[in-house]
Image (cartoon, rainbow, N blue to C red; front, top):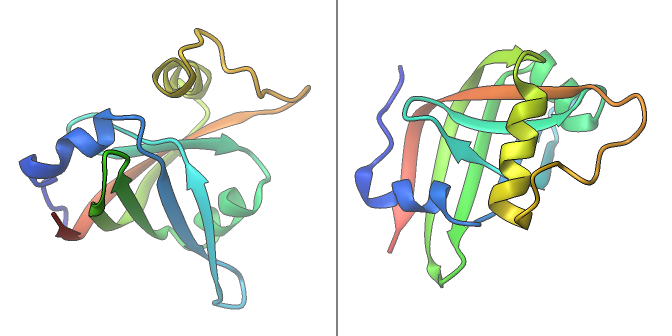
Length: 132
């Protein structure tokens, strides 16, 4: 069941705060990656390249967890547990460029590899825990 992001923590998704994304490997062991993140008012959104470990894990098991720590107060954080409800390449290039603007101040994502296909993931929040 979808949950609404607590208003008190929306700012964490607007800041240059990195999220630590937890996914499950094929053997059930956890895998964690720092990622750029944003929020469209309904979904928490991340971006990756097709074929990476997190991409494969999410496609196999859409359950994820994100931990976002306030860069201005490390004792304030938000954990979001949820489910990836949409995986799409449509709009993914524009999304990664928007994240590059947010996190790097650059109009175009500079880390693109030749032949890379960007993927946008929409996460439906289902449970929160927080502090601060």
